[in-house]
Length: 261
Ligand SMILES: NC(=O)c1ccc[n+]([C@@H]2O[C@H](COP(=O)([O-])OP(=O)(O)OC[C@H]3O[C@@H](n4cnc5c(N)ncnc54)[C@H](OP(=O)(O)O)[C@@H]3O)[C@@H](O)[C@H]2O)c1
Image (cartoon, rainbow, N blue to C red):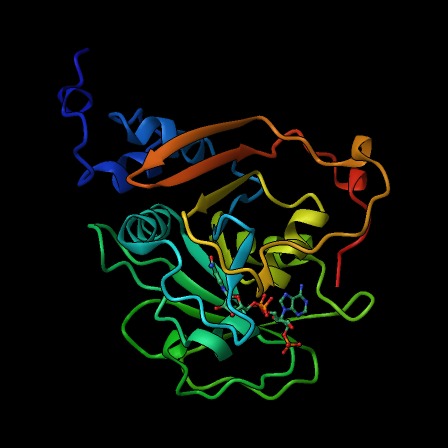
């Protein structure tokens, strides 16, 4: 049967719904987001994102990162948010940026907001926790104080001082959140990557050089290039930025060892 929507190349409006229905997308969206429509009923499908400079930094030394990727990068990030059930950030990102984590620059629904805040140290006034009708969850240690009213608590045990990313994903899947965006920052994303918990990684590189600052990823050190993680990848042009869509689905967890610092 003919699918007229597929003929309307460039039309974004229906994409978030079609991804959730597992339907094919018009270009350029099928190439960029089609892999995110293939979920399973038993586990999460997880995409990480990094907006970085040519020299691999996601923020200046002071933590300033808004907006390293300009309007095209921001629109891409909001498209990612619009097609997932949940967006995850670490406490460091909330401290540095106080992000809203909503979809504002493109059409589409805002995802549930998940903040990993082991000690419950973030203020209830953080914008990620604001009651705007969107589901909000915080991942806490078992003995951390309770979150603000309306924010759901997920309490997890720590392993070597951190939550296992797989346990975070299991907890989200158990709550019906199966398509997950790990938005950052560096530590949070590195934990998920180093434990083999990412299916895809979207890296948007902007033509800017910072020369210093926070690197996008910090993994356990390797000695030899043969130990480097090489991934199947497709590059897409986003104006003067480049999106590298990396396929990590074949990555074995044990290949990279334990989480980095
Ligand atoms: N350019 C981009 O794409 C982008 C995107 C997002 C953020 N950023 C930038 O990244 C910087 C923040 O990155 P960051 O690496 O410092 O911090 P982060 O990754 O945002 O947060 C790290 C913190 O989150 C908690 N956490 C995360 N995963 C955990 C786990 N598995 N187990 C236990 N705790 C966990 C810990 O909180 P505690 O510290 O409370 O222990 C940890 O120190 C900011 O400058 C922000 O602007 C850039």
